Image 1 (tube, helix red, strand yellow):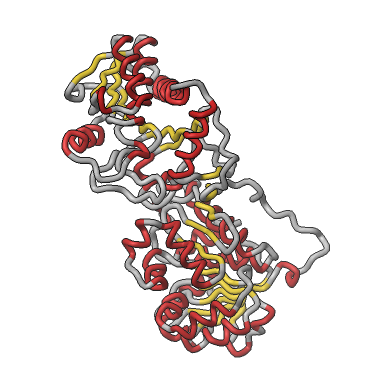
Image 2 (cartoon, one colour; image 1 turned 45 degrees about the horizontal axis):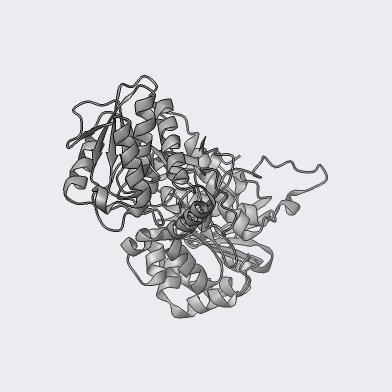
Length: 480
């Protein structure tokens, strides 16, 4: 069993893949061994989380997740704890392994109750796990309310009840866990959409089963390979790449300057700003390194372009030329809205052809506009939405939000593990666009530039000083 290391990357597997691995393991291992291993792992973590506990409430459902909880209760009973089991199963209707776990619990003297205990030191959610196919109802829903209302920490077995393990969408009745022990595999839904809030700290136990027989559904990003740059001595500013930011319509010039400041602090050799508001063509008072250029004076074919930040409707006047000529391109904000509204621009994006030359960075509403759906549909299955955008536009896509997803043609999706609610403030998306542009300008392939930038962007927020407000301009300056 391991707590996830933020410095490592981990494969993520869908529920279907997890069940295939479980089936293969059951064929290879002695009967019941897999569930017994799961119960032992749960008990070990429960004891580590609450070593001085006396009473532990184990809420068990009618299926195999409940069987894992029953096996855990056996181990807790044998170690001198007092597990109190509330159980929704019926022996005659249980899966074979779960029925055997119930028999062992009864033989071990585990206490069964019809209602949750009045006081407990740890709660264990073993109600549904990946067996959830519909919203919890009746007694299960009442027990979920009790779990969420408890002052004791909650440990979810495999996945919090009510959370979709593939998508991270949450049922109206869902456990809010403080810890989750994911069994066999890590599931994508633990790390994107509402999954991060529902899962708490995620732990993982492969139960001794190898997952290398299937291609992962996605990868959870870590900082492997992301180290401070060490530049050779014999270089000059031109060899570190040129970024130009095109945006900043009247009233929104600040967005373009935020993206440009991010590109500068992220390591681009030279950064140009081309505001679409003529009154914005003035020296930035705190960042004199930025160079102001009219759009008509930009050598588009030699630059990495960051386009759309604060662009308003004026961005439509320059997008056709950018899409035809720009060597590498990051499309954000109003550039995405224009593309969503104009079929001719959509076709120009697709014609760029090389999937490593273009990056789209939509938030969920922008993604919904591009896909012709609503935001709820995007959030209900973020992986599927990101892949559909890749299919339609043939480029790198960064679907922002909790558990930002980066994917591209012929690439396994990467789900970002960093970041927090401090980033929910105006301009942080502009900063991410500038950061991606800087990495691409320095020669990093677009897909790698995108997921590594999302990770760095979140890491800065994760290490933000307590009590200090995070603003986009401060975030940009912190991208050293």
